[in-house]
Length: 334
Image 1: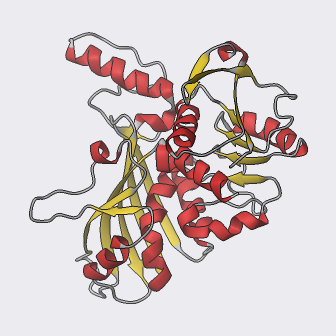
Image 2 (image 1 turned 45 degrees about the horizontal axis):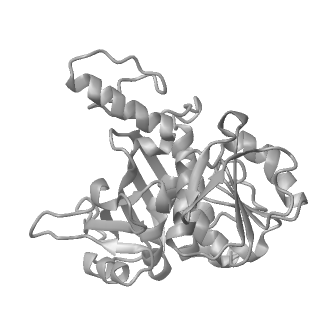
C-alpha cells in the first residue's frame, strides 16, 4: 500500500472505520486516502493521522485514480461498484458476500492462502468473519494432520450486524436494566440478556441459515478441500464486538491435545489462551481490540474412541481479524 491511492467504500460503517484505524495503527505510508459512503453521509468528517478527511458520496466517478479499494458497504454496492473500480484500474478487496463463492475470485486469509492473491483479476474476497475466526487456528493442524470433519457452534457479536445492531444491544440493555420496554428495530427478537439463531434467512431445504452456509462453504474454499465435512450452528449473542467459536474436529490420524498446543504456540495470527489451572480461556472481552485469534480449551473429544478428535474454543475481534484487519493485510500483500 506504500505510495498508493487508497479508497474506502462504506467508510462510515463499523468496518469502514476500522479500515481507517488499521491503516493508521499499522503505520502504512499511503499516498492518499479517500473516504466514500452514501449521499446521506457525504460531508461528514473523519480523522486520519491528525487530519480531518471529508466523506465523499460514492458515485461511478469516485474510483478514478484509485489503486486499492477496500469495500464494506454490502453485497449490492459491491456488485454494482467493484467492477467499476476494476475498470478504472483499482484492485478491490471486498468484505461482503458478493464474490466469495465465485471460483474465479480468491477468498483470502493471509495466514493460510496468501499465494492465491496472485490469481486475482481485480477483485479479492475477504471471508466471512465467523469463517476467519474458525479457520485461522485450525489451519496449523490441518497442514500436518488433515481435518476430515468439522462441527462448529458460533457465538456471534452484535458487531457482525453493523453499527446499528451494536447500538440496539446497548439501548435494549439499558432499557432492560431501567425496567423499561424496548421495541426491537434491527432484529425482531429482544437482544438484551438473550441469544437467538443468527438473523439470516433459513434454507427451507436444509434447515441451515445463510451464515451457517457461508461458514461451511468458505472453510472448504479457503482450505482448498471440498472433501472436508463441515456443519455449523450460528448463534447471535449479547456481546458487542468479538465472535467466539466452539469446534470439534476429526483428523485423518490420531492426535493429542499437546500436539495441537505446540502447533498453535508458533502459529501466525494465533494466541494460545489455555490455562486449565486457573480456568482461563478465550473470552470476547480479551479478544476485542486486538488482532489475534485466541485459542484454548484444547482437549480430546472423549466421545471418539479413535483418538482422532479434538475440541477447542476460540475468540477473535469480529471488526478486526474478522473483517477490517484481514482485508488490510490482503492490501499490504498486494
